[in-house]
Length: 44
Image (tube, rainbow, N blue to C red; front, top):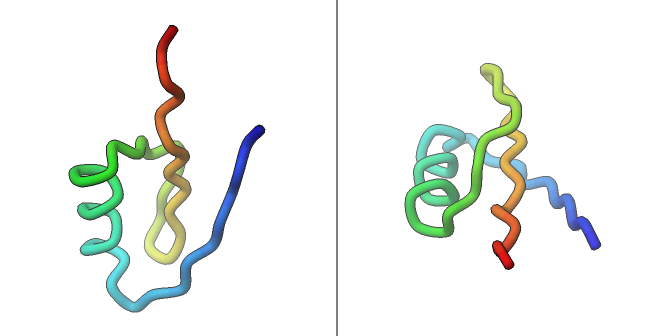
């Protein structure tokens, strides 16, 4: 199953850092107001 969630924030840069560095999310698409970062699928 794939889960997509939207988060509204004024701190897009800080949110990207948190989700990528701390939670291991990837970045599929980004621009100045939107970031799509799905969680990495477990291998195996």
